[in-house]
Image (cartoon, one colour):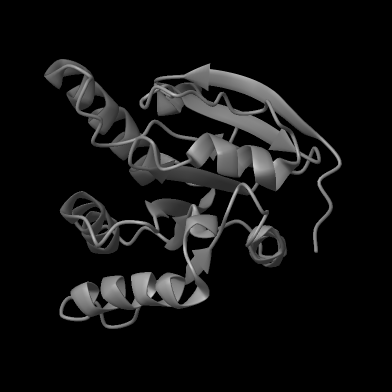
Length: 201
């Protein structure tokens, strides 16, 4: 498994054009607000305060770049579907997120975080459908799995696969994680390590 030796904040912005030069592999993390994204990023990097966690959903409102091991970028994206932001803010988030996802040429994979405690939600299904329609490489990352039994975890994935089978030829890869117990850390970092071996297109 990859060892995280360093994790450093680089820049926050709202414009994909102002992101760092696209000369390194980049992996972005996104999900509904309150899905546990910041906690997962901190768990992966072994850095308790790298991404800002908050009891108030919707804290991340910028594209945040972190340089990992001086080799690759980890990107913390704003959450989608947060009800307490204004309609104009949601529109700005949507535009910012879509521009980043579609135009950031060195983004190797998008990690879509899903709360494993809930039945499939339309907002998550619709977002992944949009990714598929636009040919965006992504994987599903089920969070907060420490709240469930092993059987419940498997059922959660099965429910999503059942919902998606009518429109997907093959299912996206899925990981099960917990920021509390570090479940899935080895698997996620090993996957990133594999992708880092590939040449950027």
